[in-house]
Length: 156
Image 1: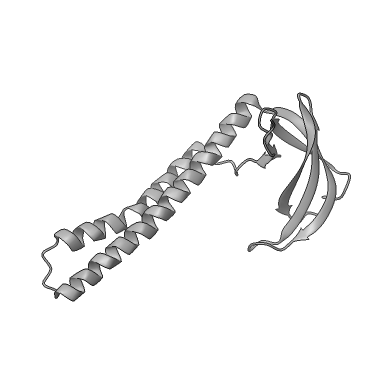
Image 2 (image 1 turned 30 degrees about the vertical axis):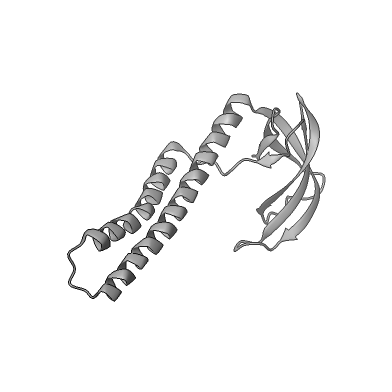
């Protein structure tokens, strides 16, 4: 059974990955530090204020660690996709079948419906969002790298 086609995450180089991981680690750390300071600290506060500080530390820990772990996983997935396509990817061609405006997110762009074909795998359809470009018209051919085993692809 063949898996559904999936576009590879944006490529992040080794230096970018290191900087992103350091940033996400920095996002994770303040919550546990605040929580430890609230629990172990010798603060002259009332019991109600102490519970408020502990609740704030718990909340900061949950949000910070959750966001940090999510970001770390996105970086890992990007690096894994890049390694997989470098190791097993084959050059292929994507034909633009339709072009439609895409207004999702902060940056409007174009939603392209593509037919991707190449050696070693059956042709498949995929949708990708690209920045607005007048040269992206139906019939245009784009270079693509595809892993035939699981149909992971990256439009160049």
